[in-house]
Length: 199
Image 1: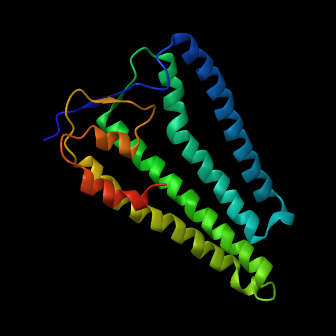
Image 2: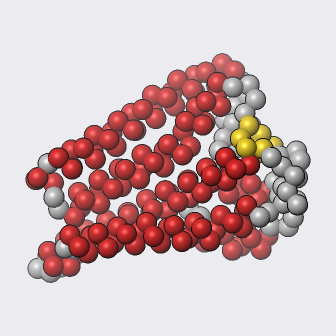
């Protein structure tokens, strides 16, 4: 039975001056990342000249990257301003799900984009037929659906683990392997099963 209701995150540093500096740096980086991704999505979706499959995938990649950044950065930035850095069990599992889901979709999209480049360079005569708008939509749906299935299979292994107090996580976010170290049970088999599924 799991008696842990929250996890204590140690963060990046315990030095208050360094925390304030890191907070300012990460706020700037986070907002530049979000603004850059938003600019890419708007530019591609409003320009008729950027209608090729490469830009279609790039637009989605920017959107997913924005979502991925937003699953980790805001909590980390807020924690740099707090003395006690805690996250509830459900909040931790939600963050774990979101970071693995969006990170996995990003990897799938990069794989699709590599395939798109391969077809454009090596088989230019068949490119327009092979990478039609409909095929691009199917590939995008497969990237999202495949990662949904993967994450929904992977995350319950962690949710069902028993965690013991003290639940001190020597990390700045809820991530898979630091959480496995906090479990009250032997996780060597789980480490082996989950190793191929995490980047």
